[in-house]
Length: 91
Image (cartoon, rainbow, N blue to C red; front, side):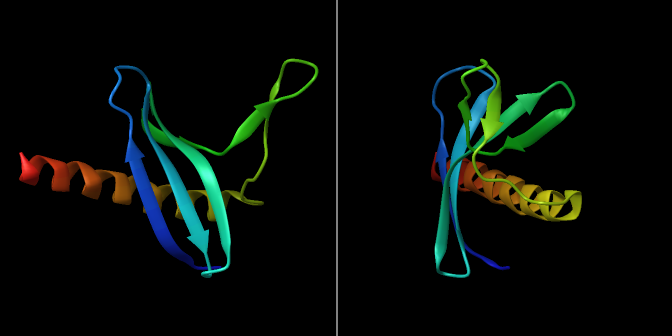
């Protein structure tokens, strides 16, 4: 599995959510609404989810194992940092 495109949309409002990211996998499959969240221990990603009938939120799409999650998170947080650097250079 190769992530072939990453699109970062930064959130302008104050709050814990910093960006929403869409990824394309192998130029064939897209996952939208991956969130970049500021947590107590730093930034992390939250996969797209929806609220179930019992009130709990459940991921709609997610990595199967922790190695895949870590690889995706590392890449997406790096792309988010790049977008911040590009924005700083423009200002």
